Length: 114
Image 1: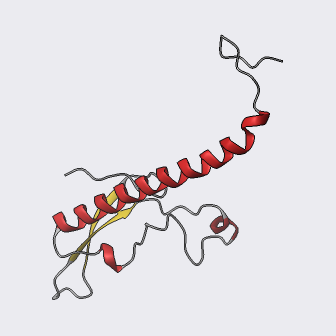
Image 2 (image 1 turned 180 degrees about the vertical axis):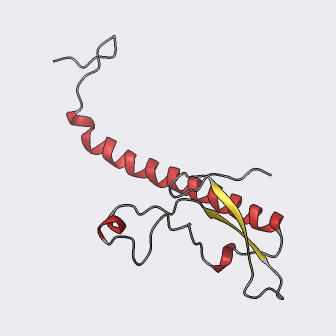
């Protein structure tokens, strides 16, 4: 089974099992493996939370079977990547249309003319 990269930070994910008690059944979860503090977490010394937001995902990611956990992660990852591309394309289009009048003319060899 192939695991998609983390849709937030791009790190490789890992598959884990969790149980609240040794006599209870386990649930399976795919999580991002990036637990290092980033951005403002570094300033806070990572005392409250450190790492990618999918380092400890919400309960929706916990499933009864490995294949279910992997499928959920992969579907979520693909959906998030598609959403990012769509939204970035929309944002880039707005930026292109705002600056198109000010953009330099491109010469025959791909250099801006002065």
